[in-house]
Amino acid sequence: MDAVSQEALLAALAGLRSRGAAVVVSTHDLALAHLACDEVCLLNRHQVAFGPTGTTLTPELLRAARNIGTPSDRRCPICELADRRAEIAADESPSLRLVTYVFGADLRRKSGTPVWNREELLDRAPDHRSSTAYTVECCLVCGWNHLHERVLMGKAHAD
Image (tube, rainbow, N blue to C red; front, side):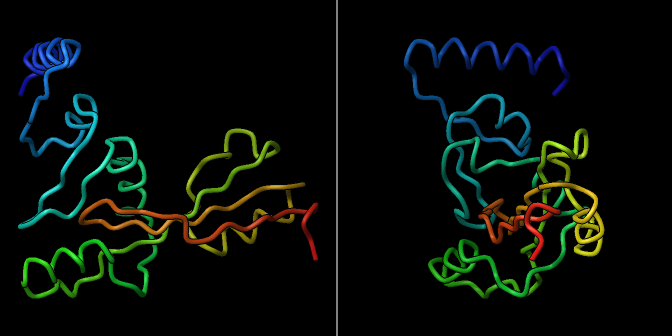
């Protein structure tokens, strides 16, 4: 869909929503779904996720998981449950990735950025007074994610 058509569609959907209408949209464009929908249902042969758009579709997290995420040793519980309910063979390829973000006032522009690997995180810690690293486990298939680990780092938290 070209940009002009997409803007017209988004305006029409917003008009319907403002009048209280329930609108169902079927699309492969997750960015469009993020802009147009309050809730989403993700399908991959069966329902793999359903919920508020803001917590179900996390494009930045999925992009980081695909590009720099570290494979997790677990299977996605949502995809696993959906496979069992649909009575289909589980996909054995690893879909969970760990992504770590670091936050801290003295990190300045680096605050809120993903960390490439654990070594980079440990190298940064002694140079700063205080920072917090959040590691999120994220499924590349359904987008499910949760906080895996939170670690306080820096001089203020040295053992």
